[in-house]
Amino acid sequence: MPSVPLILASQSPRRKELLREAGYSFKVILPEDHAESPPRPGESPHDSVLRIATEKAENVAQRVDHGLIIAGDTLAELDGNPLGKPRDRDHAREILHSLRGREHFVWTAIALWLRPQDQTIRGIDQTIVRMSDLADQEIESYLDTGLWKGKAGAFGIQDRTGWVNVVRGSESNVVGLPLELLSELLIQVTHD
Image 1 (cartoon, rainbow, N blue to C red):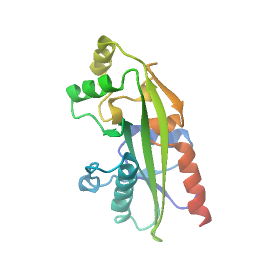
Image 2: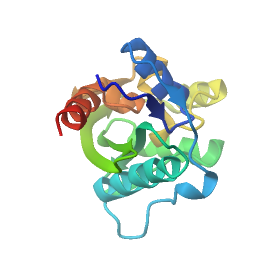
Image 3: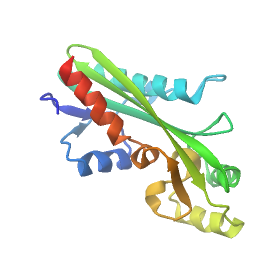
């Protein structure tokens, strides 16, 4: 654990909860709205999440004199196509219909930015997830809850619906912050 203050560059309640549950003390400084640009045409999900996490970390680093900024970005991918956060209920329904009964990937990148040294370390995690073959009514019932809002792929594994299962990889990655990867990166930053 580094001796510098930890700063989470995220408004995600799920990332905050994961960090707290893992025993980290931190404060939150949000990236400015313009800091996060959407995935670019032709950009792979891997490259997209790495770039966006880095943009968030750099934006907060420009406003911090001392500390270790933790930024992340999560994206679901189906058949090579990124599935971001749904725009509205109809878009969420469309995403869930495309995922039901299928395996897909969830990518999360973490960017650490140490101030004032401006040392950066980045890493990425991938988890394979399978969604049950949901009936239309099950999808509508989930949409009624509003839990899909703000979530990559229009669902949250932490919602404990029982129809999303990790096939291979980190469950905390699917929530939005792969704790195993974060631990590895924190060790690297304290030993460099």
